[in-house]
Length: 390
View 1: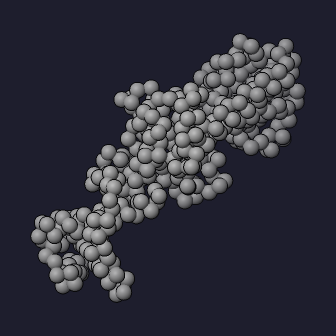
View 2: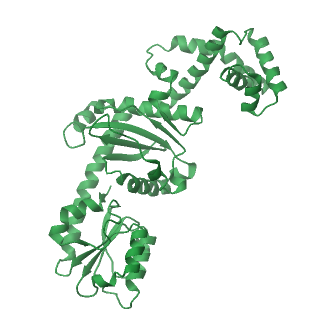
View 3: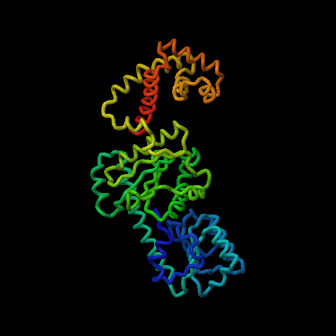
């Protein structure tokens, strides 16, 4: 719930005669509050993302401004406005200090003493509240649609009212490490992701949904590139980078949000199953066909008849027949490749396959038999995915 610094600067630079001292540094940062601060010791109470205004009233030694800015950076403030002319001047932003701000991507602006900081604070806080309300409403409406809320039609009508971007969009669902989705880490994660996404200079919505990071990217044209450059992802702190991602197809109507979310969730699940980092719904193969089926009974019958007896045998005898058969079939019926994939001995795999033939009475070297069992495994994966998406 914030505003990009470049946005507020563009809209108010003339009114408050703002002058950037650090050129383009930190312009894509966002701030969520405006804070007047004169005492360095008070910075420790900041929550982060503050746009700070100071008159330099406590500027009592040569290194005061340097210490002040270093503490702001340490406490994750978003930027600084110097109310120059009485207690502090632009010249105190030395070359070394400007270089430090550039390195930390921290923006600093100068504002003339004759501008009353009370006016700019009141203006910015009002703008923030309006932006926060709009973003919160947008997030609420999107959440309501993707979760198939009873008010879905009302949410759809509100989204198409013209207040929100009505362009092509794609959903990306990210799985993060366990530590990064704790309640405390979620705020830091969203802050870091927003800083990264702002560099794309595109419209987006990002929030946590059932422990996963959900990103909605908007483009004017459905044929535009919806990807996030790898070099931007690498700028994220390692604990906040995704371990897996599922991408939906591109949609052009908000009515497709529910389907888009299910596609992204299915793609993420297939990414896990296939141990891929990124998976698009268009690339999940046979799984996408299952989503188009209206009648699941034939698929469930095949799964129950072919795989359930093997799974029950494994449970009763603490054996590994079902995973062994899967590796065997998906490695072109090769004992050697199956053993390598499972880190097992060839003789162990051979014994299990023979046991499977004895248990089922099937010849897995027969193409039709192999296809049916592979389809049953795909069906099992799909049923697991549906339990999540439903």
